[in-house]
Image (cartoon, rainbow, N blue to C red; front, side, top):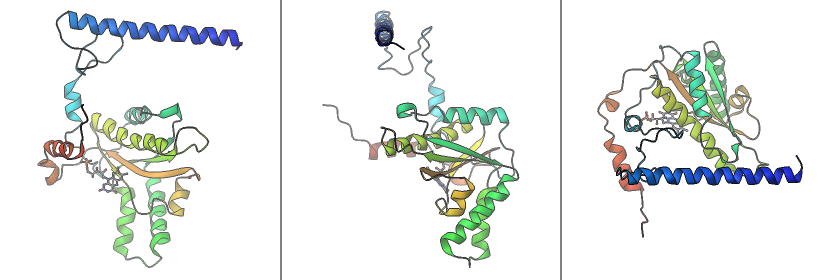
Length: 251
Ligand SMILES: Cc1cc2nc3c(=O)[nH]c(=O)nc-3n(C[C@H](O)[C@H](O)[C@H](O)COP(=O)(O)O)c2cc1C
């Protein structure tokens, strides 16, 4: 593209941005003038029609703090279209520079047997060959805790100008996005990990490159019954965390 064409394009993009900002300001002002007293900025539930912005949905927000089911180990894996949706939601996380610094490995069916082997080999690499049978069984069992597991791999581009920690943060967001999407679709979902994540056999199983780190995996499937602790859990526990962990700077 010629320099002149590039500069014309930049000017036209700027004009479009300014126009969009003006339109949004007009919409907000119109809403206030109509007596709603709401603006996009101060009320996330404001309903805005026709300009492409989403309509607020407080029920959806409330569900984010409702208890989440774990998957039933003997249940069904998500159907293909739901799995695609979960992965697509995960790919929509905040991503500075659009680097997509993550990838996923879906493990189902027979793949779980090979994964159990890798976990066991990882245990031996970490703790030595003489492991009690129960410890080995527990480690192998992690591969069979759900009908489907989605391993989350952080893949950092060390040549990018975006800091490595920002890329790792983006990758970590995908794990929670998977949990939320799976829960929203009616599945049980939980993010799990193990001490053997960084052992050679496990790295090899997931074909991890030197710039990659396994962040654990999200187990997904038919929801299991809630544990007693979860049955009695109230979202109030999160409210208390807010009081403890938030400092407000307002003047
Ligand atoms: C990176 C990561 C790894 C985790 N690994 C485990 C794990 O191995 N075992 C476990 O019980 N919980 C693990 N958790 C916590 C669970 O995902 C989950 O938060 C916890 O079981 C409570 O359930 P809830 O989030 O549905 O309330 C992990 C969370 C994260 C973010």
